[in-house]
Image 1 (tube, rainbow, N blue to C red):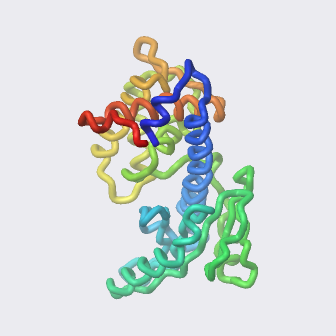
Image 2: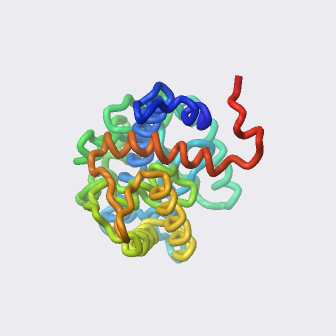
Image 3: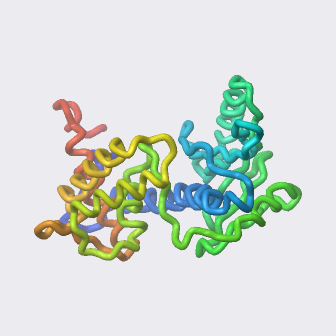
Length: 276
């Protein structure tokens, strides 16, 4: 798909391939930001709920986080929140069964699964309770009223993030890294490059689990270089500029960075031959 996008670009116009990629990025943002928003809310309100995010990871397309409380000298997982959309819903039950088996094999309590859907989405049609983020990120709604346990936990989320910014994970989608670096476009350009990388690495480290700070810094430094070389960020001297309009930024990322990534990832002559 990446090669097709590169082949059919026409003087900056949004071709069909770029348009599809733009739609995918928008859906990706809703799904990933949704689960990040929920986990961040628990991180902020851990004194009220007694639950803290123990992990944030990806499993077969589902992003998830185990939330737990302290029991004696150990942390016990109570819930596992997982992102669920139209693409991942059909395989959610199978994946969650595998994850539950892993917890059981470790001899710890099996956390109760809870599906997290993008704002405006439909309740997950499976057996798990479902929560959804309001369209303006002003709250988290319980779509499964029969599960009183979820309602009481959500009632403890009195303070929510001011604006949704992705949590850091080495496997996170590139577009999410771009939103993290720009604080979901709230960081007003121009921004000095060195300060951007340093501050972003510190910020990401505070929003990560078990990832060394230096590893995060190298990752974001390399990624920022890619944003500049691709033209997603415009470099002038030691500063970078970018559009703070979400639609324009997403379109530029879909057109420029995706093409750049495809080009630098090609290693053999066969990588340059389009699929029939």
